[in-house]
Image 1: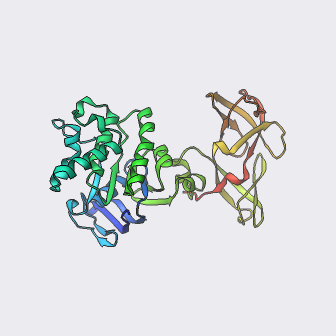
Image 2 (image 1 turned 30 degrees about the horizontal axis):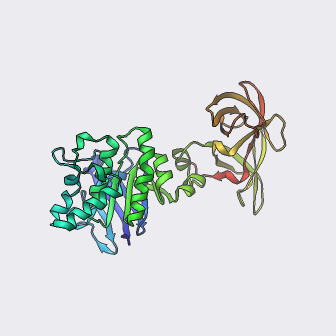
Image 3 (image 1 turned 135 degrees about the vertical axis):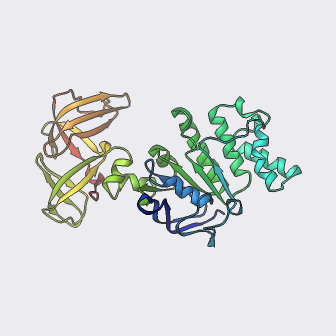
Length: 362
């Protein structure tokens, strides 16, 4: 069973007086036992500072951190039983893979057959058993990162902390390791906190995500919740692409609202909106459909740009009353595709009513 992490009103201020900067600003989070929890956000948002406070490398200015109810706010890192995986691997070049993995066990005075068994189990978990006798400089970047992960889990930590572990790898290697890291974390049952600025990493791996900006948490939820139901303009724009449209609610019912822009009216699944009020809505590019000009329930539009990408096509269309609308079309030119747009064509667009979200303006 993993460890529950409780964080209450956590603050970290660097500097004094006018030079003071609040890197972490009043954060409250509960991370559940065995959860793979992501801290996501742009550079400078406070996610690595928060991770390092959980590890004990940085002391908070205010607030508390607890592991299963035990206050560890000011405990030394070596008393917290956490495993850390760094961006830079941090492997000893003169040691073999097995020696690197076993380093933490030496500090904990684990010896003999138990030590060898735990090293072998950790290497097998990351599929590196056959490389036990090699040196780090004989491994690829992805293999070195797997060794670093094995070194972190071999000590059987209460909490596993990963600081952008895949950022030094190429795109294909990152994709290959995402699933493996998730499988290792979930099969071990260790509570894991993972820092990244990569939205796809968070969406594809996390149980839950906290999206940070300027030291504050903007939204917490599952990847699906954050992507499909962003609560603000920042969240909608940071996680993938979106179309942000200012529209006026003209007919609001308990289960749907009709909005109006210069190009016309469109229905949404939004409930009980204030009529005659301008509202900012978010519509993902994949939730916009192209139709023939004048199609039923469509808004008139003109194609500004189109890019064919094989399995998808990306279109940019002009719709009066809003910024150019981005559309992602799946299986373009396939049997289900009714429109084959070219630049300058008059077309119709339909916003899928159930995929329209009202977001807070900022």
